[in-house]
Image (cartoon, rainbow, N blue to C red):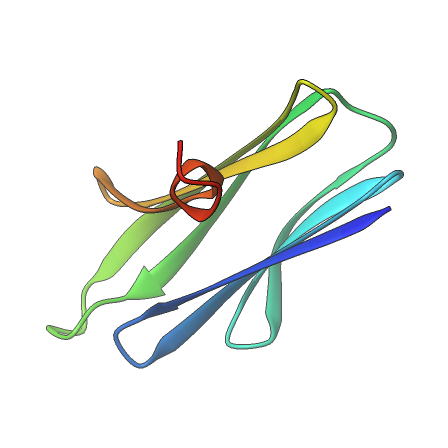
Length: 89
């Protein structure tokens, strides 16, 4: 099993990769956080520069729900991606 979620944020690309044994957060191809091992829920953290050149916190929440993986990506306090919109929920 491997899930990949990709989000554009301004000129940046945020990519989250989830496998059975780890989760990784990349910003513009650079690894910013990683969780190793089997988890039912995970949190990943990183930073991205906004259009004003200031750093904003990235928070990623990954978990299982009814045998499928769910992912939520926040930049600052704003939800920028959720798998719920992908599935129409």
